[in-house]
Amino acid sequence: MNIQNSDKIYIFGHQSPDTDSICSAIAYARLKQELGFSGAGAYRLGEMNRESAFVLDYFGVEHPPALHDVRLRLEDLQLYQPAPLLASQPVKAAWEQLHRVEGSRMVPITREDGSIEGIITIADVAEIFMELSNEDITKKHEIRFENLVEILGGKVFAGKYLYNVLCGRLYIGTNFVDEDIDNRDVVITAQMSSALHCAYELDCGCIILTDGVSPKGLEKADCAIVCVDASMFEAVSLISQAISIGSVMNRANIVTFAENSYLEDVVDVMRTSRHRNFPILDRAGVLSGVISRRHLMSYKGRKVILIDHNERSQSVDGLAQAEIIEIIDHHRVADIQTDSPLYVRSEPVGSTATIICKMYLENNVEIPREIAGLLLAAILSDTLMFSSPTCTNEDRKMANLLAISAKVELTEFGREMFTVSTALADMAVVDILAQDRKPFTFGAHRAYISQINTLDFGGIANRIDEFFHIMEEYYESHDCSLVMLMITDIVSEGSEIIAIGRGKKLLEQAYGLKSDERSIFLPGVVSRKKQIVPTLTQFASMNY
Image (cartoon, rainbow, N blue to C red):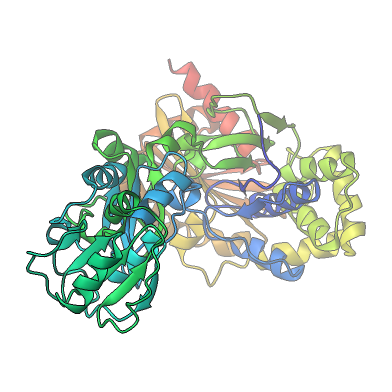
């Protein structure tokens, strides 16, 4: 997998993020940056709980930005960046830009404020160039006088053309005796005698003197005298390039896209359109680039690293359109599939932070105090201060090292953190249930399981009626068969289990929760990951 060091990499944990998910993402983004991946950044998939917020604020770390989905938007692509062209400019400017940008077959034309006014294609320009010039060209197309002089490489020797745009006829040759010429008309000639006749006798509007002929004798002419070195034939052939873009561009039925449009939505339109290039507008309606069908041949999804999860149902929206390059996790292997090989680091430890701490040490990267503090807090949170059955000697070892780097007393800091995070008396029940809710599938049962860790078990347990009511509402409004809550008592190391739904029979089989009971206390059960999920998975498989 070819990853450039400057590529943007989105690093994030699971939905309803806990402290391990938030802190590990931040710490791993920092490690990737130290290893040279400057585009690595940490994000969160939901609102942080009060424990995570406390930890980040305690160590002075900025809260990560929210990430709602990872589907590619047009603004993520390396679009063509055409120089602004105005309708008043000559078609030669459009032709030059079409050749300057490889693969471009259309140039957008903007107003002074950057908004789109029209488009001109390579076919439009080629058709104009094929016309060459004839005496009626000024009737068919707008030619600005200043553009004509510029395209011919001419110099105004004397006089002045009275109009900004050529509004008369175009005369080419040497014999104008019988012509009805006035001050709107333009004469192209290489004969000095013809130029003098047109200037002083026919009241011509402009004389273009070709072949480098000396304009001596025309100093007092009222009409514009333009001298060019090109031959008459070359001058005539160049006139079509001076035609204003605005007179040939297409103003109707222009297909544009907003730069914040999802690429997958744009692709369907592009594939069915006869056009190959499309203007992209920013949120203010100003041109920001051009997308071509060529972009569809080489684009890849956003590069992402999954932290503390490997299930699509727990991850960000649009993950299927992203390019997963790494997974760092400590959970069971679930349903993530990828199109190409990737780096996976999964270990049976109590916290993803333990793995990331080891990766710092393995890469000889110093762990700053604030990062050490975040990793320590994540380990203490996920292992319930080492009381969870998921806790390993690796977790304890890394936590003790991190406490030294973070310059905190481990037990004292852990108690302060849990005191803040478990003070739920002032929180609404609906918010408590949502802060650590994860989806799971047990056979035919789709379940949502929330967990609350608390030092005030009695105060929380007294609110069971409130929890039950909100859980019923959630069950009725979601496509699931089980809604469950674990109220984990950190002191006594056990959990009160509340369950609603037809999937409740799994808890009856696994733990003896009777059909007429709303909850049951399970001593020694504190881990959703290692105790609840494997048990329910086992009993679900037995029902087949």
